[in-house]
Picture 1 (cartoon, rainbow, N blue to C red):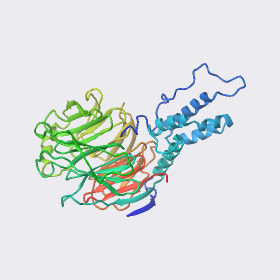
Picture 2 (cartoon, rainbow, N blue to C red):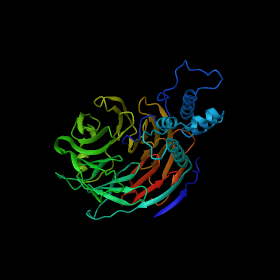
Picture 3 (cartoon, rainbow, N blue to C red):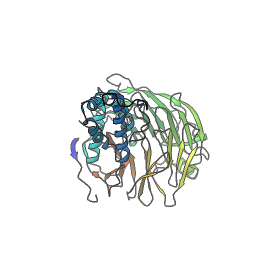
Picture 4 (cartoon, rainbow, N blue to C red):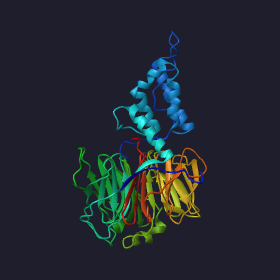
Length: 456
């Protein structure tokens, strides 16, 4: 099923080396400009390297003071000064620097960096105005249990990965919307009916990593060719030791780091792996100690979220339970630099991150977007509901509160939400994920929904 839609305005008026830290506007420190001694030439014309550095800084300043979309308008003003300044618009290095700083991209999908910038700008504009193509995705249910249900989702530039309760992960091609491959786990132990359930997925263009509730971590290489095999071989990167570690209730990461959140054994809340060597670098933490009993119950009954962990683009991670939210460093052995307790509670399913910030909704329905490095509050909104799911990308937060998905702009603190995604979402959602182009969600009945905001 597929449809094209533009969401109406509200009545109350979203890892692999492809995304890099600094997306969404930031300091202009990544551009190597001319030395201070390079002034105007004798004929009064600014040297091209100077104009290029100026254009870069003007765009960055606009993205910081207004929003990412303002960068294009600022650049247009620079290019209109004269023909010499307009010639700078042909510099591929300028557009590469801008894509890195404003859109968080270190790898392009188009022929030139200028085309990449234009595509990213157009997609962000579609996100702002609610222009998207909506589809539901079908998959081959072969080799599955009768009670198959979705547990988690992950996006890359090319694929959507869906993890199921039976331990399988299915890959969908985002261009064709087709189910193209399935990854099967190697179960070396079973403890309860749901020990095989997928806890989390780390997806890039070259590799898929997923973990199960039992604690097994699997890796699958994604063929660089035009088509993936229907069944992708997997291997163990880590064997679960459930008696010593407890239940692996969530798993997240990027190409550099993997993070597992456990519940069941005191003092064993986190395990951090080096994603390149696949070696563990830290084990410990007390975040989930109060949820130890609930962690063990997850093997026999799929309770609501015990805890959640997400990774930023700044080598930090954010984790929460229904009582606490912590921010910790991945490079320095899990060093915690923020620990907050919420007397009113936390909606665990609302936690998500982008390169620089995280979103969380408390028990009163107050949502906050904060920068992960200094906890500065960027945005506040209201998302009341019995259950709240959340996800975010570089400029927008999506929340589901029991009946509808609402979009909130991070960079502009306008009253209310921007619009709602109301197409075909019956029943409760289990998981939701977003990147700068797509939003995906799945229901308890395993129906999978996809919204494509691409500039097509």
